Amino acid sequence: MHQKKQEIFFFRPEVTSSQNQLSRGAIRLSQPISGWLATAISLLIIFLFIIYVTCGSVTRKDRVTGITVPVGGNIGVFALSSGVVMKFLVNEGEQVKAGQPLFEISTERQSDHGEVSALVAQQLSSRKISLQAELRLTLLNLSEKRDSIKKKLKTLESEMLQIQQEITLAERRVYLAQSSMSKYETLQTDGFISGLQLQQKEGDMIDAVSHLSSLKRDRLQIQENMQDLANEDRTLARTIGSEQAQFEGSLANLEQQIVENNDRKSNFITAPETGIVATIICQHGQVVNTGQTLAMLIPSSSGKSLLEAQLYVPSRTAGFISPGKTVLIRFHAFPYEKFGLYKGIVGDISKTPFAPNELPPSLASTILSNASRNTSGYGGAEGLYRVKVKLEQQGVLAYGKIQDLKPAMTLEADIVQERRKIWEWIAEPILAIAKR
Image: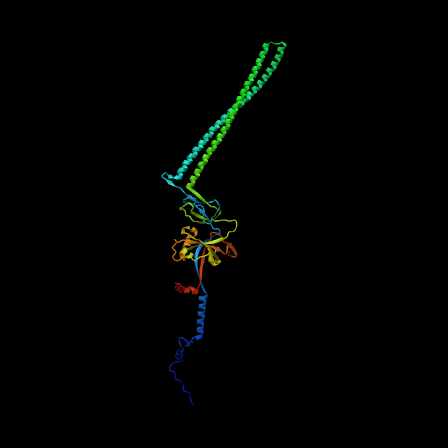
């Protein structure tokens, strides 16, 4: 029987098995992508790029800062005279009434002897005291004269009463004398008495009539004296009124001079209308001239007034701004991340720029810093143009409710300067060279 030959191994099976296994795995041969698929993807990318360049556009926007104001504009508060701003009596955003003091302006002048207004005030005060003393003395003298006249009138009234009584008695004596005379005449006719006795009675009657006439003359003299005293009293009364009116006029003139002198020392600038103090332009201690703007006032109205946005843009940016441009607004009171952007339309652009010191103080630093950050080459001394923007909405939708915008709200806005196709932007250098 044939016997199978036995194989002889020099190494163990485990050694042979470990060498047959690759340390990096099995070898696989990669197959390249087919040419038509690569071509299709490349053409698709090129096609999409051409569409993007042809149809796509680039928008150039400028970011500026502004404030909401009534459409009718603000009311200026102006200095009535040259001086130094000594005191602010209100703050920005505060509600004021017409006639309410807003600022105190000092117009004090100095001389070698001190403050001119203080010296004048001292002189006016001395004159006032002297005039008041003179008025009191004059009125006292005239009053004493009237009191004397009144006493004389009372004395004459008493004498008049007494002499009237004497006249009544004298008239009675005359009557009795006349009756006795008539009887004596009858008796003398009948021969009962002599003619001498009749003459005596006649003399008695003449004495009675003469005494009555004398009393009447005295009464008439007393009446004339009383009339003269009454006239003198009325004259003194008119003199007192005239002197008092004259002195009061002089005192009123002095009071006016005192008020005018105080006004020369300092005066108060009042609100021309009821409203809200939008901006305070002046600074404490600043020297102002007559007619210089101190503050801007937003007038109040009985109804709901429309608001507009006023933006301040550098001259380098203002060149491409024109009415009808779109503006995207972000109100600081309503963060745009939560409440979104709001549109507006440019309505008007100021003809002349505003100097940095003419900007609203509450926004000046923000406006100037934004202009420096957003405008290349802006140094801070360049004037800014005011752009009025008509708001498409007068309120902001917040938490399901329309919140009305209020005057003096600060905001940021992006003014859409121009929209250009991407291919125009890419080809701009070539087109510029071609135009040359």
